[in-house]
Length: 322
Image (cartoon, rainbow, N blue to C red; front, side, top):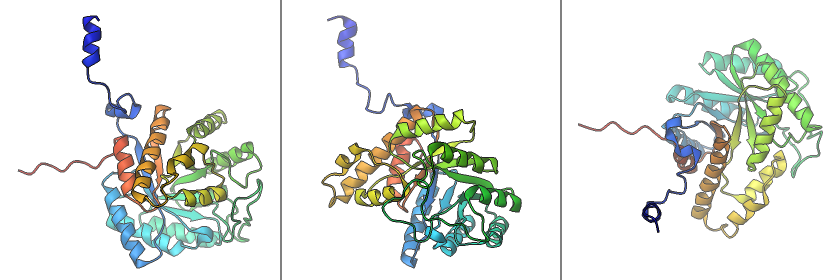
């Protein structure tokens, strides 16, 4: 054996992630944002606030607060967004939808947000209050525009821009919106939202990285140049995931089920598996030029802190005491 081969045999082997692109911290960590849903009870509000304060230290680009179906959590959304604005250093983004509200009502809410210092809106068509369960056929999902409201998200974006110069994020669907007639129709709808004034698109959650990459390529070929930020959902409850996916048209790869098999009564291991899968998904995306992620937190902090740590997104170290 040559000296070089002998030395190589005893040299330290690289760690599992050493060749991974995100281990090159000289390039800087990716940008992240977090999405919460509004609390329904005082106890849930207390837990959510603990989550918000813990994730605040990671310095996200913004945090968003959702509506329920049909705007059912509208007032709680408004209250949570205003509290984030008043009591944290975070940049809050409020969800607004077209459902169950007139243009005048939505414009009033938007003006109140602007006056409260909230500059970012996530503008969505929204889900029908009593939408179908278990998936929908292409071309329809039971949605009907409010007779005096904004009909679709592109109309909402244009209306918000007339109210004030908001930063606006909109939704994108790597696997096509359930109500879209075709992939091309869905892409045309995304272009309409961007042409109306939206600044970025955030995708529905997905798990097959190649689906996102193909969608990004199609969008680029169609002339879309704004960021298309991947939406990442860490999965801790596989049964719940199947219900969520059926309603929004997101597919679940066959390999995912085996990772959660036998863990129904083992939440600690489920969380470890969830963090590992989400981090691997982000690493593959970053290897393909993605440098921003939007996390659907489900109002949980532990998974997000672990995933972000693996991506190099970490809280600043405290200054040493004298």
